[in-house]
Amino acid sequence: MLHARYWRYDGESPQVPNILKYDPHGFGLKVMETLDAMIDLNINQYQGVSLAGAIANHHKGDSFGHQVHVAATAEQWEAAKKYWESGAFD
Image (cartoon, rainbow, N blue to C red; front, top):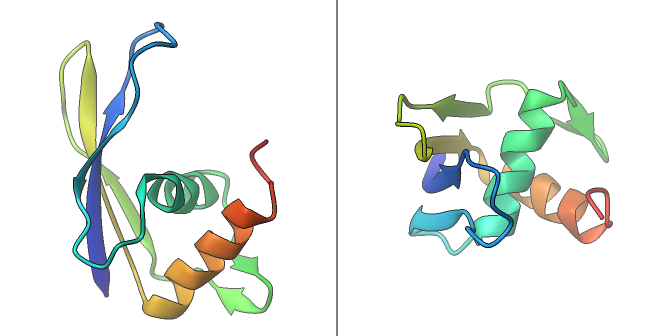
């Protein structure tokens, strides 16, 4: 499993972005957010790649935001990247 983390803003201001926290494999914030969303939306497979076992743990934060830890295999990360590149969240 390859791990990454980002800080997710929980407020209502559009000016406050999510922030990359730990990305040793260079996935990028948008791919992390996409993998998190795919798991949240129960998207179990994308282009023949199963997302079984991929995780997105949301840690307790405060009223401003919280940390999200995402982990998946290299193949699952690549599927999340392709899903984001497809414009699925535009």
